[in-house]
Image 1 (cartoon, rainbow, N blue to C red):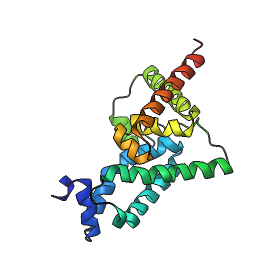
Image 2: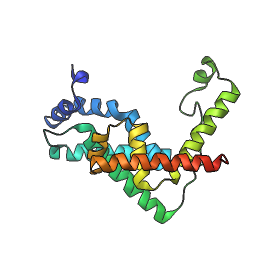
Image 3: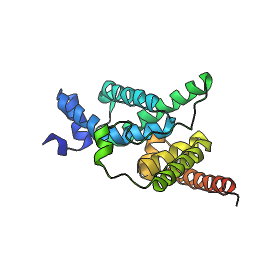
Length: 194
């Protein structure tokens, strides 16, 4: 069955003209890749546009994929490059707000909200404040550190995969992740008055 095939097998099937294989790849990475792009650029619409552009480029460039390579790092390389370009363009044009929250139920229906047990208001507030603070701390990092934190924590990529995606030595990935965590911890202490 095609949905049990590896990413690389699905890409090869796509090259051979099996359209369903490419659709499976897209569906397999839809949530994960969108979340990466959203955390990277901080804007839902831009992330959606970048997701579509990533898969358009994957489709257009699939014949350049090395048979001995791994699909996931290759795809993330394309996505990270597109996100970097979008951030550069955005900086030249305008600043964006980090205050915008994705509201619970924004994508769902009223039935989704009514049928699900609602958490305590204090828990929702705590979670929103924590998410907002984490986003703020992440945005304060330089881009070279932010992209590594996003790939490592939000997308669960391994050091070797991040190294491939960003075309950096593994030691650089580890040291940047360590430096990012120290900077975020220091910023958190300052914000909390320690």
